[in-house]
Each structure stands twice: as C-alpha cells, then as structure tokens.
Length: 618
Image (cartoon, one colour):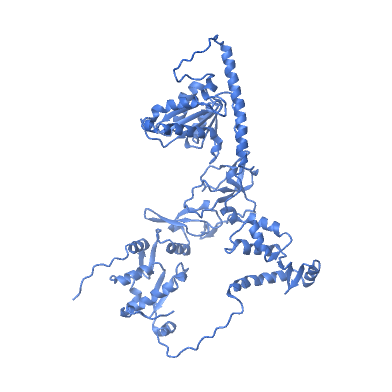
C-alpha cells in the first residue's frame, strides 16, 4: 500500500513521517494483525523508531499513536533501505504510465465460485459410489430417473446415494449460517429443491432432532409438559401441613417475616410473625409452641427448598418425631399451591389496610388470621374454622333471636364434626378433579424417562455467570438417575453445577441423539489440561486478572473463572481484548523492551488526550 501525504502531514518531522507509514499500515491490515499468533515484526530503515516506545518525551501526536499501537503485539527492527528494496520502491515516483487495464466479463459469476469449490469433490464422490453399469440399470428402472454428466437425477433433482453424502447435504442446508438451523419442514423444503433420496423426509426429521445446536438454542412452542398429580387427601385435620415464609415486610417491633402454616384438610391457617428467617432449630421451636401444642404432631410437613429444611438438624428433628419432611419440586410452585395462594390472600389483606397497618402489621396479624379462617373456602365447601371446630366464630357480638332447642348431646356434636370433615374430604376430591381438568387442558402428558436416559435441562431458572440474550435455552444432556414421581426426576450433575438435581418434567427435553463423550484432557508437560474454546469475560480480583473460560466440547454450565496464569491460550486472550476494550486486561507490549498497561490506555482515551502544558524554549 502507499498514498500521498496531505498538507499537514508534509510538515511532520522525519521520524513522524516514518512512524505515520507504520500507523497507516496497521490501520489497513488491522484485521490481520489483531490477535496474530506470533509477534509481528516491522522492518524500517529509520533506526530511531526502535526506541520510540521507550522515549521519555513524546509529542501529543506521538503519544496518541502510541495508544493506537498498544492494541498490537509487535516489535520494530532496523533494516537498511538497500536490504528492503520492495518497500523502498513505493516511495519513488514512477515516470512511465501503465497501459489501460482491459476487463472482460467473468465466465463464472463470483457468487457461484464458492458453491463450485465445495461441490466438486461432492460430485466426484457420487460418481464413485456406483459403477457405470449400475447407474445405467438404476436409470432404466424408473422414467423419472436419468443420468446427466455422469450424475444420477430423480425428477430433475440430484440423487444422493450414501449416508455420508446425505450428512454433507444436511450440513449445507441446515447448519451453515446461510441456512440458519431451520426446523424439519423448512430444512426438508430446502433440500428438496436440489436433492432427493428415498428416505429423505424421515432422515431430515431425525437429523434435525439430533442437531445439538437446535436442542440447546431453540425455544419449545408446545404445551407445557406434565399433567397435574395432586397430593393425597389427609384423613384427619393437621395430619398434613405445609409451610412457607413471607419476607420483605417493613420492620415492626424487630419483626420482618411471617411464617404461614396451613392444614391441608380444613385449610385452617396460622400466621406467625418472626424477627427474621428462622434457622432450623428456631423453626422447630416455633412449630412446637404454636402448632404442635394445639393440634398435635403432623405426619407430613410440606415446604419449599429453603435452607432451613436442608440442614441435618431439621432432618434429625423430623426423624426423631417420626414426621416426614417433603420438599417441593424446584421451580414448580404447583407442588404447594395452597400455601402460595394463601400467601397472596394475606398480602392482599395487609395491602388493603396498608395505611393503618404499615407500621403496625404485627398487631393486625391475628385479625388477618381470624378473617381468613372465617372465610368460605370453595375447595372444602365450608370455612376453615367451621371445618376444624364444627361451628362459626362469633365476630359481630350481635344476638339474633332463634327458636329454643334442646342442647345437643356430646355424641351428636362429635358425630356432626365427623360428618363435616368427611364432607370436606369429598369436596376436596371434587375440587382436585376440577383443578386437574382445567390444568390438563393447558398441558400435555410428558414423556416417561427411565434411569439412564439422557435429557436436556431448561435454563429458564438457571443463573448464568454472564447474562445476555444469547445464553442457551437448554444445557446438558444429563443422565436421569431416578424417577421421584410420575412428573419429577432426579438428574446426575457435574460437581461444577451446584443446583438441586430434582426437576419437573416441564423443564426437561429428551436428548434423542447419541451423546458425544466429553473430550478427555491432554497431557502437557506431565499435567492434564483441557482445551479452551474462547475467552468470554475478564475481571480483577485484587491485583490478579481472571478470565471466564468455556471449554471445548462442554456446555455453558461448565464455564469457569481461571487466573490469567492458568490460561495457556495467548492467541485467544489477544483476540479477546481488542474486541472488549472496556474489560480488564494484561500489560500489552508496544515494542521490544517496553510495556504499557491497557487499562491506563483506556483511561487516557476516555479523557480524549487533553493537551499537556508546554513551555517555550529560547
């Protein structure tokens, strides 16, 4: 490359003119020089440029250019002009004129060249798949078949005879960027424009289902999987209870949390104010004092997967009292729908009296409990209070005249209470059937997975280390270890994925392809190392630089933060920083024997290089 100097550049000193040539060359070939595998060597016949990067006094222009050069890994080497004649010839004016260049129309259009380069070997493989005699016999068997230029055609479409060649066709019309990973119908239409083979429709559907990129990145548009499976109806009150917490409330009298306890049969609830989220031991004490002392020990306690219910103390406490602790499925609130619904009712009550209860909600909690327990419940057909005690509480202090009647015997009261609770059980069964019918209309029955099957896991509720719209929709595939119930499964996770391994079937998708094993580590100087795919992010921990690394052959769930000293991928590191100038980076070399911190470079760029004060020299 070469160009003329403009009026301002003609006034540059010699050193700056020589440096200008290097700067323009780096601008012209920037896409080649950034992230180069080896250090770039610049040959110049101006010896002083070797020491430009280490000079103590630089003009503002030279300093700006040094900031530009900081993006590149290069060294400047002196070479006399007589030994560098090719570059030196560009600076001499040519007196002769070149003849006019005559252009001719290309025989092959440029947009067809790439296709021809790719398909020439493909056509040759088709020709070699059969002998000429077999091809002729093949063509005579059907009038739609023909042989053109030694290639078999069916109904004017190229016949693809082998599985290997069919996979190449699928790659061309499904995988490459111009195809865009379409679904099976669109991929089939693309292939049918040019190619044919007997099992085309079946093969395309299978290959699309086996496409790992499609499995990871595409959103499912079918109905949510998994029909409703209700919990069994208890045989007596307070045999089965559920727990949940309401947090984020204003601190009143040092209380900021409400513990909600609900009986699964009568729907009777207790609202208990807590100073904070209780620990396992504190929760056990609260239940003994506020629930067990009035209703006895439950057989089953249903809760979410809070930390209180995962500690050994809670498990030991339940085991000692012969209480079964059941945890709801991760990210599936339908498991404990009654408590979730009651939480909404309680929040609505407190919100309705917000002006009065904002600073005194703890004193209003017993009123909220009474109001809820005295309200008609559609699933039981009675109020929770009546379902538990057999009568309605007096809340109005109004005496209504009634006909006199004899006081019922104790046996009649007990019989009436038993009949009420039996009626509640019947209402609950009818309500569950009604809810199931309504729920199942919007859901479809999920596939049944067996231990050992491979499944993809939805990332809907997974917190990635880097959040952006290009995160995959599914990760995996993972092995199914156990079927907990008809719609819940336990998966086998790597140690790096620290989440609970039990999931509802709506978050799973069958992995139909033969899963490729993860690449094994390679030995480098006696140590096992895994191949780095690229660099995603960087950050500083103290004075140390760390990189977020995805591993080749592994999913995004295996991404790891590693110290820069442990990342042996200099090419990928050099490629990352020019594309992410706002991220922390290492010390970048300007030239031989000199370094500059890239963060300092960015700070100087941000300040737009304010011109320093200068003094006149007489």
